[in-house]
Length: 126
Image (cartoon, rainbow, N blue to C red; front, top):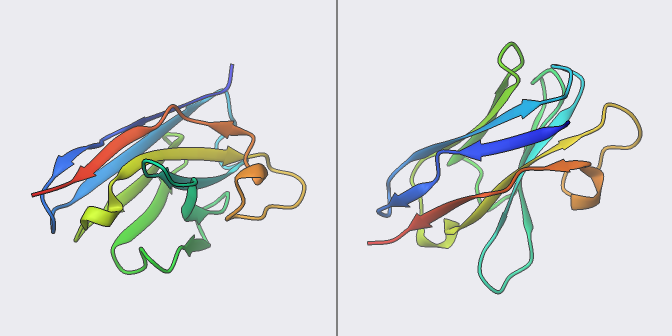
């Protein structure tokens, strides 16, 4: 019933931009926190950004601060990750995730998220 679907990935040159979207279904709008994670080939899945239920608080990995912006539109049950000034090291599969609206939310911990999307590929290359 619960489903998260990412879109917006693709191939861009260094310095380019992309906006990823994550449409949630089966979840009550405003009742869950959301995070974005990424996984590069041969590496562990890492935290990118997170946003609380109503969008009043955001959190970022140091490596993406100032370049990536997380947001959400609860009326559309959609989360976004706006990416600018992309670097080759940003290349990865990007996943959105949703955390239940109860319990402890450790925003950078994968285990804190109950639902995950299928991922969307972002490739930054010249």
